[in-house]
Image (tube, rainbow, N blue to C red; front, side, top):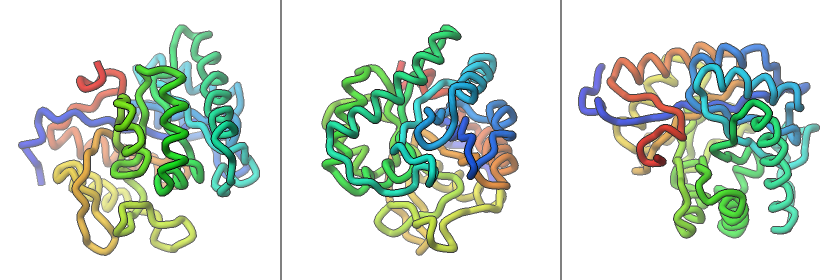
Length: 265
């Protein structure tokens, strides 16, 4: 079904990339970079290294894909998914270090990091904890007041960023289910992931169309949606990304890199 009223709406597709590790291959990254509009690049603390950062930056530049830092806890053993209790100065140091690592790589190619999106447990914890969310927002704002902050819609991260009048892009997850409180279903539960591309594309279009989260229970939570996140770390990621992109385009949406969206120019 086509939704003609979405004709002039801008939307972004983002993906976590460069996540080379024992958990995840990067073999799909070049093809994903032909599909998505913005890349969240692993900065070496949960996955990736300088070589993978170089690869993603080069392909992103050639494809007109905007480049973002994807900072995490320093936790390669668990792909950044283990919760850690760090103080605010440790969190600040963590984010700035990873941003600077990727920014240095980007500058070699006359590019720059234009958005930041925290990864894994750090992101999940900040969605629920306003104090941590405030520390992250303050740090990102300190790095660059013009940088785009990519956060889960309706989260404490969005709340904290709004207080600082930051450039906020609110995202939904194409391949994840939601609880009734708006948080993601834990990966420890069997229904956390959506692996069927057909289900994912319908899930996404419905949320974008209605500007609301579709919860597993059937509940809908009104929210702002600027971007759709595709995860590259499951087997169906390529087909899911292609299916979602085609469905959004077929329904008249204007797909843009984050830094080219009208609200951020």
